Image (cartoon, rainbow, N blue to C red; front, side, top):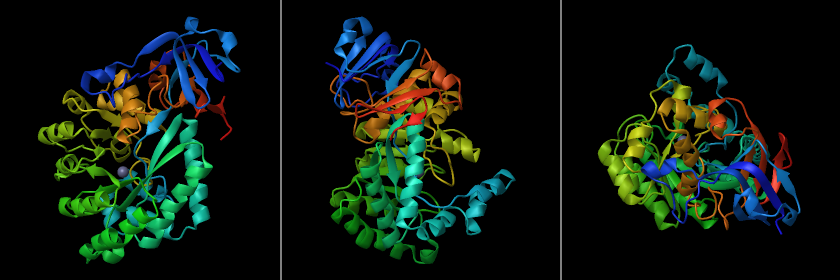
Length: 418
Ligand SMILES: [Zn+2]
């Protein structure tokens, strides 16, 4: 007996069949079942197949999804949602012609958000995070990675991770916490950056690890942020404390961070706009997932990451929003998925894989989520369109009808019950 049976739908399974992720040409196989059904028992998927393969009487709740599409719940594997304030005025300055670097040099940029975040209370942060996570859920995202990185002092970094932990208990969306103390060097350490890296390694990381506040450690390796050597020092210290690794690599220039991510066995390497063929080959060998962030390029008016080259190099590619106040103020993964198709020339099927199974692999959760297969957790989204391609084609419009999270209907006809 199913607790919930969704039937008569086009079901896009993204079935992994035991694989951790899909690489290269495999990304185009999304396992579409026309007139399909998804049967759920408790919080687990019990049946995925044709509607005529199950009896509709075997369900406590039956959802007739004729003319609709069912996909795995989306996984957003890279966000910076834990911040206060906003940078709308800086956005306006940039649109009017000032450069991102120029605004940062005049005391704006990340420093603006750090000031606002340090001034926020735990309750302020929790309220902001809750609202943003509601928004993610409303677009069909059921698992979200959230980084710290706008505190940049011991107390505020810990406060951010505590707020993220509290959010995990309060919100139905699954949250994966990442410590990003090495986001940028804060203004008070500008002339003694080594002392800031010491602070991250000797004070922040041990406290984060001792209290189990983060699953991952991330670093931003870039000119103006941290060098490869500094990033490596932070990541090696994190790994020694039992944290897993991800890296902001080669976003604005080729630094060697992608090779470092591969050498350290990072679970993901993110951005990769300036990663060269050799770096991509190293990533392929290490099994690291390439997380591309086209929303950032769109927001900043920069060239897109080369998704075709990355997929053709045989890498598992994920696409995420990078939702953050400075370079991509957007938690709508559907829109970012459309941008990936339109601007990075990914096929519809590659994009679907990139925001489901491969994104789950980028958080090392693809054994539990990211596809619709019996035995996996029942995270599914129902769209009010008959063909999954319409979700990306009709861009900027939310065709979401229902979200099922852990087997429970948490959004229905735009109404959130979360
Ligand atoms: Zn980022």
